[in-house]
Image 1: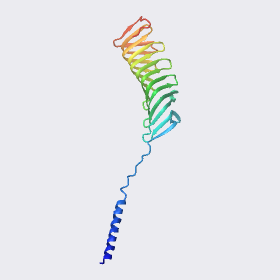
Image 2: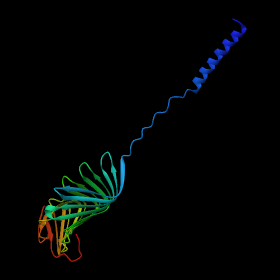
Image 3: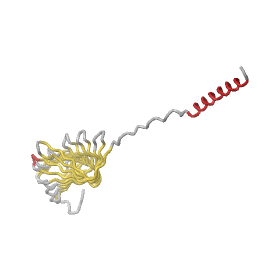
Image 4: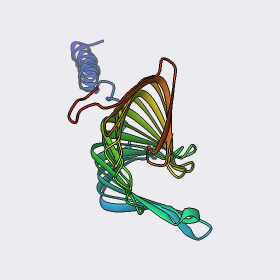
Length: 247
């Protein structure tokens, strides 16, 4: 092979080596994985209403300034709640107002809190810090600074109240204080009030006052606006107590 041929062959080899080096150096690295972007799980609405109907009648309607719906659970977070519930069989309506709450779609239960006020068309009213509605049991559970006022002026305060709307029954527990419209007062650890029947039973550290009478016992029952009452268990009654004297 001549010198010229040798130089040409060397040039070709060098050329191919350069091409290989260039190809290696310029080959892009493994592309980054495509980022998966999940769709949003919540949707916000301004000023909306949810309505539940049965047999052509509106059972309840829920409105608020803003609602946020979780697309997975269908739970609804509510701001400035107004909830109206209609008891058509008893011709009674209820209205609940609260600063915020959450409606659980699966069981239709609801929790609200902040300036909670519940009223009905009979004139009864409940205020509390927070409240839970259990749809299946038709049960309201209130806690925190509770005051219940009936349409004839009775008042109940306690640490916790269960209000069975179908049975028109109130069960109050913890620091129970009942004041009747005629000034009669009852204190106890627990109280059950059958509103429609005007019957009350109280247990635990029971104290009753009316006019110049003070009574103490473990268990008490009363009806007809405290015109009739009974005490059981370490019962004691004092008469002639001066006005202004407390328990």
